[in-house]
Length: 310
Image (cartoon, rainbow, N blue to C red; front, side):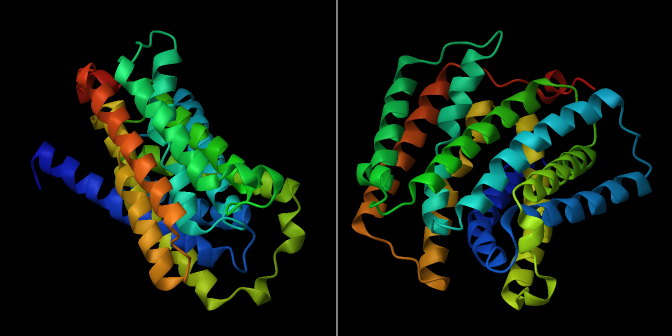
């Protein structure tokens, strides 16, 4: 795994599997910890550890521009994206949440097209977009609009907005000036996202809902897993992937994450896997495949040197 290709394969494997399991970890963590404050604790702890390690190793002090850019990325990815997942999992099963988040490649392609200087994706991509929308309708169900469907409509909407936020942050991260050190970038994004989660969480009244003495061992274990594996290991791998892979490839973790999440949710948390979930999952994953394959045909891979602007 010392070759560039080997490192890329290893990084994708970590993101595929570990992030698939984080949905279940969030499910347990928010049982006795308010969701946004839990996410804040996760990223502030992980970000502090990574940033201290970066500075201890003699890493460069980030510039004001780099702090600004990583703050934007951290807010979009971690507050808007991961924070949305944690909040939505109060009412949406972890496996279903992962399936709804699987539309990230759809948003990624559209945002990368509509940004200044972006290129129109191939026509086949729009077939994938349409298929993805059909999959979401099947999974959520039109009756959810009236509060009688299998998925809580508020949670589903928050997850859709969170997916858009994550995709926007991923596209922005590809073209902005960031520290040369991937560890520094990850740490700074986590610190910014963590602060954002604290502010929004307190504004939503989560401070009064937090009871330190009532936090369960399962919630602590879930939070610790998220800090070490979901943040320090997997998120660092993801930020490296963003800088070294094409935008359409970055979102391919959406193939595997839902499968891992649904399986673990069924195996450990007893979440139901109905024929409707299976059908919706199949359509969404197929849509992701179409979007990725079609968009990848027309986009050259940019070198890491071209992407690294600072």
